[in-house]
Image 1: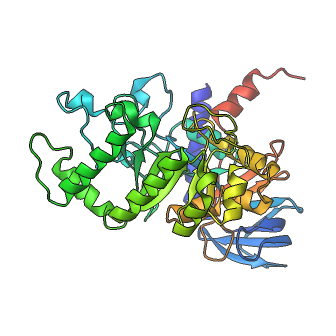
Image 2: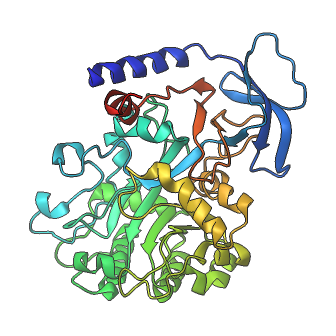
Image 3: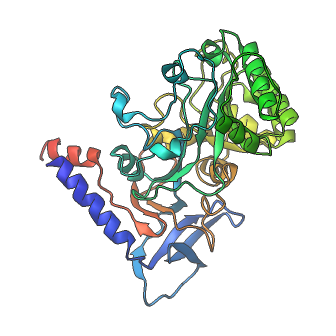
Amino acid sequence: MIRRAIVLALGCALSAQALAETVLIRGARVHTVDTVGTLDDTDVLVRDGKIAQVGKAIVAADARVVEAKGRPLTPGLFGGLTALGLEDVSAEIGTVDQAYTPGAVVPAQPMGLRPEFDVAYAYNPASMVIPVQVVEGVTFTMLAPSAAPGGSLIGGQGGLATLDGHSIDLAPGSKSLFVALGSGASPLTGNSRAAQYMLLDQAIRETRGALFEGERLLTVAGRETMAKYLAGGRVVFYVDRAIDIRRALAFAKKNGLKPVIAGGVEAWQVAAELAAAKVPVLVDPLVNLPGNFDQFGATLENAARLQQAGVTVAFSISGDASHMARKLRQTAGNAVANGLPWDAGLAAITANPAAIFGATDRGRIAVGQRADLVLWSGDPLDVTSLAEKVWIGGDAQSMVSRQTLLRDRYAPKR
């Protein structure tokens, strides 16, 4: 019965998408996350999936009117680096697609690197996990391949997915390569972080035509993929320790890569270097205690210190990021409570990640932008506020998920 209700809800959402409805959101407190800042008692007109007008007393005879009554309107939220659409149940291997384990395919080559692995081919926009996030305001996420146990330090490629339940193409220009560094990746590289650079260096030299005795680290397709990133492609380095961040920056500069730091627990210690190099950082604002020896400098003020130094900051939850993506706005609120300006907290889950990953069509409320919007009951960074309406590409999203159906079925009747 629950499954049938979900299918019907998703079917209604797909039907709505074909209508390309014109919507006028009237009288909202509009957090544009743009140069004009926050606009009170302001209207937003959505037409053909994009924001057509932002201003006072907009008239559109063909529009369906949504009365905001002063409630906050924000861009759709970023879900972080996740496996949304790539993982439904982590304990069920048939629903887990975000990691490639080379040893399982080429046992004689346990340290082989496969940068050509691209999770986009496994993305399922109809995953039951996605509506759970959408009903709480999450409209896009970065699909991030994982260096799972037995994998390699080059996890593969990912990109930005739009969580509208049907789009399978990732956002143009968002494709990124993911590389794991530090102690967490040491078991993949002979139990030494020094070997990580040895292997990366060999992979780059192979790409550039160098010959090696014995087995290569890269396939022909792998070398072709690496060549694209060596021409200025975006590479996300999972790394926490300050000295390892410095080495990652130097490595990226030497090899013509466009780095993004993810994790960055000790990034505040090298904030000036990150700002000077214009390297953005995705952090988890809730990390305040060292979970391992790479995180001795953990602090709840990480995001605030980075932002104050001029670093572009975005947020991503560590751990079970896919199922907890909807809680990213709560972590933004925690960062604000620990010194980050409120506007910067909202930008870290909207405009900043969109810009970091090349999706300049979203993350802000401005004319010409995609109409990915959320109308809130209250402060969007307050955990007690709820998303009341969500639009993706101008289409109103169903506010029904597996969780809401279970709630309605089993909650005690009063």
